[in-house]
Length: 441
Ligand SMILES: *Cc1c(COP(=O)(O)O)cnc(C)c1O
Image 1 (tube, helix red, strand yellow):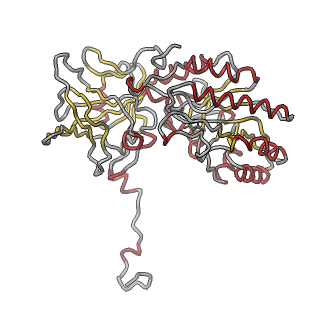
Image 2 (cartoon, protein in one colour):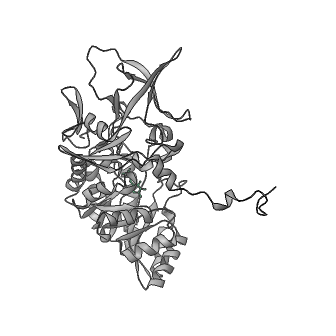
């Protein structure tokens, strides 16, 4: 089996003459123009990753639907629309963003365990490709809303295949104990129930067993169970036209922790297990499309030495990149200036300024000597980075930049503190006299 990088294309973030560059732009130029912290995405790398999926699946009828939740930047969505991607959305907001980026509604799939009536209504009116339905009550609600509109809702039933995905417990989704999907054993019954609903058209099955999976084995187990289910449904006279096989493979955050399978091997497995079923396949990669295409850049504020530790205090924090605090995730950290081969690497605790001990990006990370004002970059930060960012500690939402060759543009600007204050309001009655009858004494 071929193991290694996602795609053997050129690395968009590398040193040229000892200076970190993003495609053909020096990272310093972006840092000077936009300030830090800031996300930078390499447009050509996004294209390569999409093409890797499209090429690997070219012998099977398929649609690659980028999972917006990994990074819903309008510019990235627009970039993907132009290259033939469909979209996997998990909220009405994501559907609206995909449409705003010019996506064809017939290429949008709507997943998620808690769709509201309003979201289903808007998605029906927009004419999306498919609702991935996760429960009987959701199916009934969708049937009612479609009825009120005089429409028929295209549906895939999301099956919970009950396999262990061998990933972090917070991102496994395909075990019986998880909140996702319909129990494997109940699919036939629910399919029949759906068949009796006048405003539902069940076209297929959907599954998603988790994220950041580095082994093909859990997929093999889930796909084999799904193939068996399709045969059973067909034996009962049901028509199964499509299979949505969920998110993409994991990425190489840390080489020591294992490397992901090649996309071609993943596609081969899909062909072996599901290829003979004559179903249209939907693949929903998020992380593997955008993760390796993004970095978070930051500036060293202080190097603080205590009795037994050396802290690297950055201007980036967990509100900008939550993954280390939330999932104990590893992100490689590299300086903008390539380290002198002679320099001594020492352990550092890499932290942000937020008042939480969990605002720690790395412990005992070996780094060359750095000083206040030096800049650094977290690698593989394009997915679940900016999309999970917040304004905790009244820190402005982190800006984003996209690079293509020697061009770069800000695709989301950093709000000013004035912008942030203007979004809020103080009720008039707060300033009323203290004898206000609504006020407790
Ligand atoms: C999160 C999610 C994805 C994307 O997963 P990645 O691991 O980022 O590729 C795809 N489909 C569904 C239903 C999801 O919840």
